[in-house]
Amino acid sequence: MVTEEYILSKGYTKYPPTQFDSDIVSCRFQKCFRNEKGKKYFIDVLKIDRHFIPSHQRDEYWKPYSFEYGLQVSVGEDEKSINLQFFSSWTLEQVEEFVEDFFTKMKINYYEINDVRQTLPDTDK
Image 1 (tube, rainbow, N blue to C red):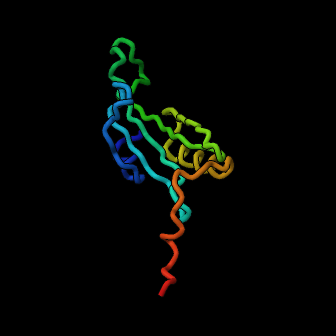
Image 2 (cartoon, rainbow, N blue to C red; image 1 turned 90 degrees about the horizontal axis):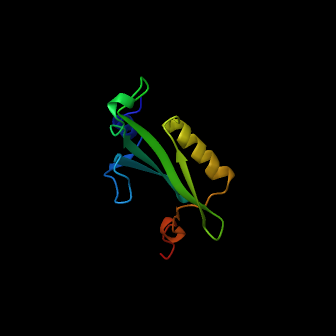
């Protein structure tokens, strides 16, 4: 079972819900994925409080919370946005693996590319 501690151990940072989250989001986590070229994308994890389900409607599969995963990326010069959402049937590892594969194969834009001038050695001396 996924826990907050497990998500934190995978390098995610915990944040409070935003003003745009629904009342059932108890907290969120985020991790930036990057390489030498820059920031590729961020994966968000939402912890969903499931106590809103009345006790008489809870079956043997009911859990007090679940996690949803998502991100927004863009494609092409005109920055067409794509939202991806993964529900609790996915594991964190499956989401990370899928997104990395998707990023590579679909030629997703970098979130932010490093400034080359900052990474080059000073040659003015």
